[in-house]
Structure formats: C-alpha cells, structure tokens
Image (cartoon, rainbow, N blue to C red; front, side):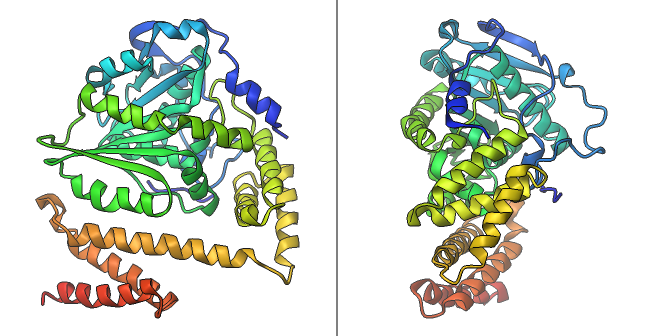
Length: 417
C-alpha cells in the first residue's frame, strides 16, 4: 500500500441517505461530547491509495476512539429527524475552533457544527485524520446528516487537512471550506473527476494573510481550471485568522447553491454519495462503484470515466470480488484495437498539466511574504519543469507556445537577469 504524504444497490444508498440515527440527537450546544465508538468510515484511504480490511499494524496501535472529544452544536430543527447540514471544523491548535466566529451563521441556517479536540498541527497526520473521521461518524450516529450539505472546514493547517480529506473521500461531503489554507488534488484520475462532479470548494483569505497568494494564484485557479466549482474570498484588513459570521453566511449560501445539483447527480450515480450515519462495507462500496463503472462503459461520453473508475476500485479494494471483475473488464478493453478513450485520457492529462504549470508559475512569479521568499527559487524551478513538459507534449499548440514564452521569461528570472 502506498502511503500519502501529507453489491451496494441504488435502493440501499437511497435508504442510507435518509436513514435516521438510532440515538436521540443532543440538541443545543455541548462544549465536550465524547465519541461513542470507533469510526466505520474509511480513514485509511485519506492517507494511502488503498482501503485494506484492517489498518496497517503500526498505525495508531494505542489509539482509543472513545477518548476523543469534540465541541458540538445541534439546532432544534434536528428533532425533526430530517437530514441536517453539517460543518465539521478542524482547528490549527488542540482546542476546537470556528464556533465563536460562525455560531450566528450556523444557527440562522440550521447547521450542525462540530470541532474536535486534539487534532491540531502538532498531532501526527494519521492520528489527526482518524480523529476527524471518528467525530464525523459519531455526529452521523447521533443526528441524520445530509451528505450533499456536509462541509469539512478548517483553519490554516486544519484547512489543509480538511481539503485533503474531502478530496480523498468526496462521497461523504458536499464540499470543503479552506480558511487560510488548502491542499492538492489526489493523483487518481477517477477521484479528481469525482471531486469535479460533486464538490464545491470555498477558499477564504485576507489581504494581510501570508497565504493569500497561495489561495488566490495557486489553489483557486488550478481547481477552477480542472473543472472544480471553486470560489476564493479575499477580505480587506483580514490577516491569518478565522473570519466572523458575516463572512460565513455568504460562504454557506454559495456552497448550498449547488446542493440540489449534487442531489441530482447522486440520484443518477448513487455510489457518488454516502450518508455517514450508515456507511457501506468495503465490499458494498466496491460493488456499487463497479456497477456505476459498468453503466458508464455503455455510453461513449462516459466510457473513459468508467474505465478510470475500474482502475481505481481495482487498486483501492484489491482483494474484493469487484476488484477481480474490474481487472477482467480492464484487460478486455486493453485488448481492443479500437481505443477511443485514449484521446480523452491524453486530453485530461494535458489539461491538468497545463493547469498546474500556470498555477505554480502564477504563485512563484507573484508577490510572496517574507517567510516564503526563500522558496521562490524552488517554485520557479517547479514551474519551469512543468512548462517544459507542456512544451515537449505539443510544441505547436497554443499551450506549447505559451510554454516556450514562459520558459524564456522564467529562465531569465532564475538567472537573475
């Protein structure tokens, strides 16, 4: 299993999406709520490219989920048992964060709010991810949660974790909120497409935030260029901080504007959405993705995405029957002489490469805060490498000509001329 740095039928998915949790909701504000039991959610995949039946033996051997606590607010409307929207906020420190700034917006819009203790920047990444998904599962056990309106949020280093988990497990979420921080898309083609098809990404920064350039020139434009619904908010006089409810209200409104679209897409492709209150097993999830892949293979417009999903599930759940079926289908298609999907594969790789080159170039070429200035040379070298790949790929294309121009200009900057 490669570590990362940093048959479920449609009817069953529909039932899970609406199924109420067994426990009575803890309505109101609770400064400390304890996790009831270990998460059933696939926390390992947020850190790796596989979903094994058991985590690696050396991962969190002494971890106790029931020792995890979190801040919780459940609006009175949760008593109706109708699935509620949720913000799960990851702090940069060991105390929860976000509630004091966003409570007015959450109360007004009827959002459940949760934020874990002990998941700050000093916490090892495996433990941090596990804590977040323990809390997410626990909230789902207590209160029915709407996956189309579940947003993983965070501040600074917490934002990087929030965005990374959301990009790894888009089925659990409607989007991510990165406050003064964000993270890369996954390498898997099918997951990048899942993110683009399902998620909304809200990025928040300030004119005095040292990460302003990263969000405005790197993260936001790259996501937009590869088809992810993304918006960057930059606030005057704001530094590296969590903004107040006047900021939260329009952000939540913008995220929710796409909730109906997420619902429609999930009705067409049920494996796209999972309610955390009753998640599928490994076999059920793989079976559901296999079924979706087979449906996608039936139409030219979705053939390539279906093949990428087959490839993804055969790696992620390598030991389940659906993975064997996926490998068999992939071998069948690989043996065909007519291979129309290859052009789409090339086009997608090219689109992502060009987006990366432009984003890294914009970030490294623009103004940087003093603490990042020493990294500029590495950014310029990274942009040069990406532009060279663009040029080698298609020198006579518009992007190839853009690459040639930028290479000349960046080499001049790198040499100090």
